[in-house]
Length: 474
Image (cartoon, rainbow, N blue to C red; front, side, top):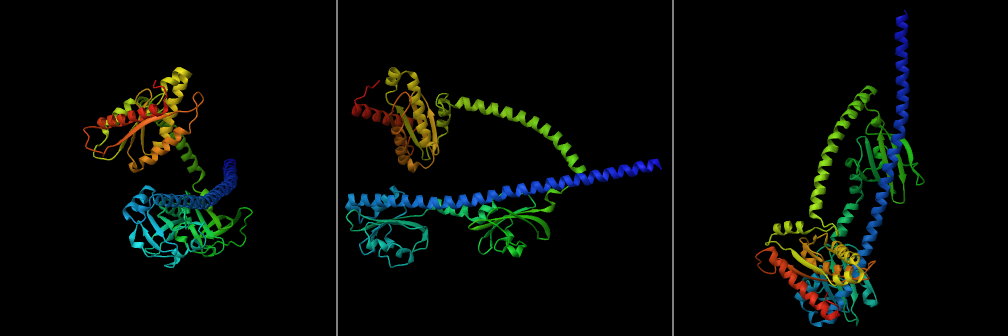
């Protein structure tokens, strides 16, 4: 009898302990579900708001840029009237200014010349897209830029900017296919934004239009295009003041639903009730013990592997990096020169500081080091996205550009600007001499022939600098 009581008492204690544990787990699970849902909700709202802001800023910045290009082309044509009817020259100008089309309109709004003869004869009455620019005929002080719009002739998405020339005799329009903008808009599409959100199994994110309550984005694509009420969600009590939490039944499962509405969207995060209730205490204990043991072993092995890897990477980095400037060093330069393919187009730029010895003698070696590091920083800022920067001597640098070689002159212009705007602690300004050579200029015997040709042009640049400035050649 006593043994039976002990068994009964033990069972009761186990039951009470399990009930207490279940209550604690439910409380913890509810708190976790609320916190996780709130984090996801805030993340979605932040991303959507940021995407709207970025898209609008991008459009406005592109418009300003395109208007500047239109004015620049207008000045070029006014400066050289001979190109006004020369299609080939206009096409060259279009390429130089990085625009797809150039159109010249007369004072009646008709295209009479340009880089694309197939559009000659179109005017502001030719279609809705062309009519947008009619105000130009009444006010010659206007400059206009159109949003991304299918053009009248072919329906391809373009942005057009237009301006009058200086004497008001003709209008100059440039057309650009804004690939970056189109890709940005596609990426910012609500459906793409929500579909890319990371969620756990048992969780769903939906974004519905604030007025129609039609689901425009969802981690479950089958719900796209449906109304909230069709999937079991009532938005009658949703508020813009904070998150509204309610219980719903969706897809035959009980879920905790958190909603928030702003000016444009209703954002919903759902979590299945069973999300935090998978597995019993024994399974949790066993898995927990296993994970602790496994994580200890994995951590030990991983740390050992990572230590070896970091040491190897550090050794490689050290052997290929210049200690002062953090550019690639002579060792890396020699290795990369051997790998260059003369049948491919790339650009070699030879760069050398002017007046380094004078700075060392006048202000000390800290000033010389400052100039060397500043030159390296300017080169990295200007060229690192398109190639590599090497320090191959005291104040001698080499840049090898392998990407977007057609933009080398723009990159050089940016480099000149960075150098001109630099001011240091020990030295107020710096100048550099450089020369560049395309690998496709002629048939070369080796990459080193190209480097010598670039050096020769650099020395010519240096000679001009000293001759024009009258500076000491030291």
